[in-house]
Image (cartoon, rainbow, N blue to C red; front, side, top):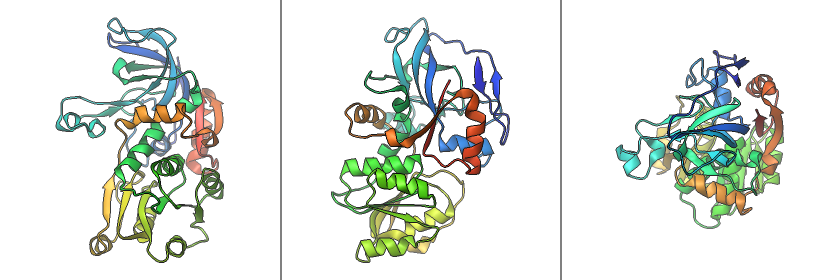
Amino acid sequence: MRALVYEGAWQMPLREIDPPLPGPDDVLVAVQAAGVCGSDVHGFTGSTGRRTPGIVMGHEFTGSISSVGSRVQAYGIDDRVVVQPLTTCGACPMCLAGRPNVCFSRTLIGMHTHGAYAELVRVPQHQLYRLPDSVSWEHGSLVEPLSVALHAVNRTPLTLMDTVVIVGAGTIGLLALLAARLKGAGRIIVTDLSTHRLALARHLGADIVVNVGDQDPLAVVQEATGGAGADATLEAVGISATVQQALAVTRIGGSITWIGNSAPDVTLNMQQVVTREITIRGSYGFNQEFAVAIDALCLGRINVTPLIERIAPLDEGPQLVHSLATGSLDVAKVILTP
């Protein structure tokens, strides 16, 4: 079968590889739509060290079942599914506490096992969700990143009409904007360097957008809040500059949720955290939010159509990922259709 194989930093050519074989509790999913995640782009450049040469990336995907294992009874050939890519043990303290997203031995399709930049993917049956007919393949491929955004907003203490700042207008930041609005946020301010993405944020409902290339985000936030700052800030980039920005714009006693995961080490002013009693929490993956995301799309509570700016066949994947990595392609979401 055809697949994009990561062979080292900046190398992910289209190759012919052996198709997977399902185990007794697995299905083979014929991929219909696979979203290109920012974490895969960072993995492609080698900057995170979280992708091993030889792996097929891709963890945001939908497809139809092409084969089932001997013990699979709940699903059949041609069933439409969206895949929850996180594999957990079900027995560690975190799993037993209802937090499988931070399972002690979690693995991820597309990072530890072959993923969706391919024609077929082997998936354990318990990681399948039915994709309603009313949700397109492409929209369904955004269930996973939407789940990440919903989880982050769920972890963020928000009171109705709170002021929220979202640092970073990538896919997760834009979806966090939609999720925060759904949860009852009042004024939402989005910061980024991309004029295009900020225009998209405005289209999606941001009240104020700040281009940090020529505007001071702290001054804008203070003016909008009477000098107080944001009640809650969601940081969706993950580098020192944006972490520092998130701290600066958050009010005394406010909260910051870190979603961004670009750099392993960042620098911030701990005295500001301590003396202003800022609550900082990390947010990773999702739990029950995966099913919630499907419902949100099915019921029309969240519209992801504006985020999908490029749909392309698998053989265009290497160039598109390269263009995303260099910044020569500035779009919210690229979807590959193997």
